[in-house]
Length: 441
Ligand code: SF4
View 1 (tube, rainbow, N blue to C red):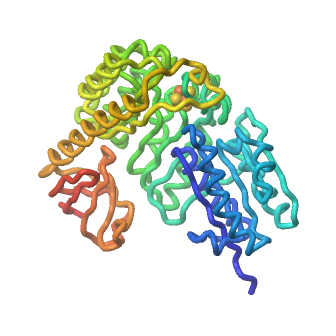
View 2 (view 1 turned 90 degrees about the horizontal axis):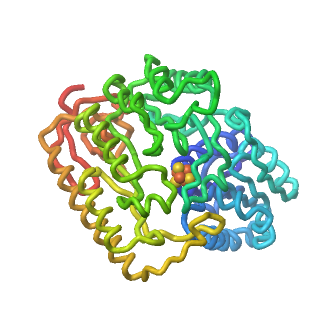
């Protein structure tokens, strides 16, 4: 019997990449590659890259350096690079890393099986053309980890917003929405296969359907998906604050299956910084949307992103971010120091804030958030939360699940409970986890 070939896949960055990587695993399985967690045992190494940080290219080349030494011992090893860095670097990647066999961009997953098969016969290839129609959603099968009870379903891709700091519109292309009928069909198939929760995924889901005549808007799409009987819980990400509509906010009150959590990146609390970022909303408008969400869904958990040290952010502007963060009361916050991405508008902005000042601001913001998250987790002790059990915890001796507010929860119970939505009493609130006990099976 022929031995199964092995794929080692490394994924960087956002949930869009995680979702693409699930598809890559399915596609490679289709041409005879099973997964391995050890690159030394691989016949095929693929990197699915992200270029959101300034050091992204160096990180990719650093990783490739490690794989080069494996290839010296195993000359038939195939190495491929995909995702946003591949889209940006293109031919340069093949020139700078001559041991790389294939480079595929963000719109080219559907070509990957053919590229790998060609590489098996010694052919190097590169595919980075944009495919700006709906076909790019349908050229490859929905695939994912077998047995998982939560899954991502892509509803739109690309972005037309051109925030001054962001590389996404340059590497993921223009915004395009997938047909609602195909989305509903995919979710139905997933629930039939045992999936309990789906997260509808896109760079800016709030603008879903708005540029596609005949398609519903995102609020109506949520309602259509929620009607599927087998589905227990529904989530979505990511939302742009300027595009979140009253109708979408009302969905949190109207759709019981919609989890009470939203990721709503503010990026800054200062109007002058938001304007330079080209975010399209003011601090007041952002806070008004947060207030409307809290009114529609009392107890909703809001998470966000903050960029510290954007060009032009002075101490006063940073203080406005600190007060915004306080006022929103984020459950969790992803925060980092701004770094310029070549090709974006902000890369040309003068940036005269010393690095040490940016670092100090970030540390202050993160320390305050850490205290807030812990206090919120501790405040949940004694409450009963609906936890969707995802499977075994990382230690393997307990179960892991998530509350509707998206807080990771560890509890005792039988592994057969995976996929069930259970009432769980919270008995301890830690920094990054809740500990719970099942109230009722
Ligand atoms: S909305 Fe702004 S930050 Fe988000 S992907 Fe589009 S350009 Fe980037």
